[in-house]
Image 1 (cartoon, chains in turn purple, blue):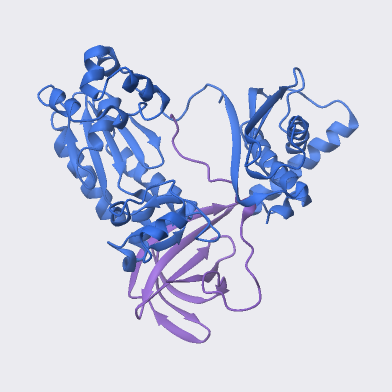
Image 2 (tube, rainbow over the protein chains, first blue to last red):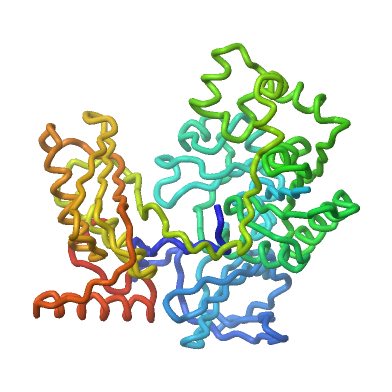
Amino acid sequence: MNQNSFSPKARWDRFEPDKTGFNPDCLNERIEVLAFFKHTKIFPKSFIWNNKEYKIETITYNWQERIGQALINYFSVLSSGQMYQISFNNSTFRWQIDKLMQ
Amino acid sequence: MILHVDMDAFFASIEQAINPRLKDKPLIVGSRGNKMHTVVCAASYAAKALGIYSGMPSREAFARCPNLEFVEADQSKYIWTSEQIFELLKSFNFPLNYASIDEFQMDLGAHENPVSLGNELRKQIYADFNITASVGIAKNWLLAKLASKLNKPDGLALINDENFEAVLRKTSLDELCGMGGKTGQVFIAQGLKTCWDLYLNLPAFFDNNPSKFDENPGKSSELPKSVSHSYTLPKVQINHQVIQAWIRLLAEMVGTRLRQQNLVSATVHLWLNGPEIGNFGAQKTYPNQATNDGFEIYQRASKVMARLAAKNPRIRAIGVTCSSLSLSVYQPLFSEEIRREGLIKALDRINNRFGEGSIYPAITSFTR
């Protein structure tokens, strides 16, 4: 093998979330976030979801994915004993909660 | 000297780093969908200790361990982490190459302290990503890869002239890269059991193994030999429309990758797998009619499928491969061709802007 990086497989089979009902594995709801930007990194500190504030105690992991021209930054965060996955789209400047992690 | 880095239970380790609740638990990473109808992509070391391995049907894995944790695979995490590890290793300024998504090789040349360097690499990977790696160091890539498996997980091993014989004597032949399949069976049938047996009969295999490094790693000027996509369906499928939809989707994915590399293909190969037909594979070449149009590739693949003797066979897996590749130099002359090319370019622009799959052939909606 002789390559510098991999091309992600086409997300032609990207799952379209069911718009009705609560699905903790696929929330995709807009949230408001207080974040610290340092150099090229983002450190979310807290978020407001459904009018409730969640203080982020730990960011356990973060990664990025490019979808078209948009760069999505994903964060797995711990707040009051519950893990959440939130993400930031640098093209639309949208923060959203992706899912509750079991 | 070659240094080989092999990440430990890569996918599973990343998921455990993401969700600390899963740490030290038996965990499998499986494809999307019903967790009882998939296969194990990766297993944590706790799961491996229970006899669960990659490729095992998930149903069997859960039978072995009812409390098994399951996480859906998310390629974006693993690819991103792999690329970041590659960037980290690049900072050490040695020729560097991917061996796979979770394996990397560095050419250390005559570095005076490779063991210390290997330990520093492992430490930095853990500090940055909270996942462990095992390192092997030896005179060539084959032995370095073997060495990386000796002290897994989170270990380092060096194969040198002093321990070369001892290591090969205690390593069975099928553990050597390239000897796990039919090639290994040939040697085993001739009575060779260990890597030392192979060395006694074929010393050149270990001594003269060529380096995998080019002068410009990652920037090969050679054309790829083929471009392909395959998919195992969530369940056996008999609906002809759904099967055609999958072939159309795979053909479009292949066509997209060809266009990204400015390539065209003259040969289309279709592979099908199903209970009645087993593995079916056939191809057709269209000399002087090379294409990178997904629809054209789909039509050619459909003609190949028409050769199937069985009518309406049940299909479990499909693959579309394009080969006989060349650079695209043809300029369309006829108005229909020009219109078609304009349409394809517009579709590519939309997908490049908003993400692959943002606009897609209508028939592929049957795959969702």
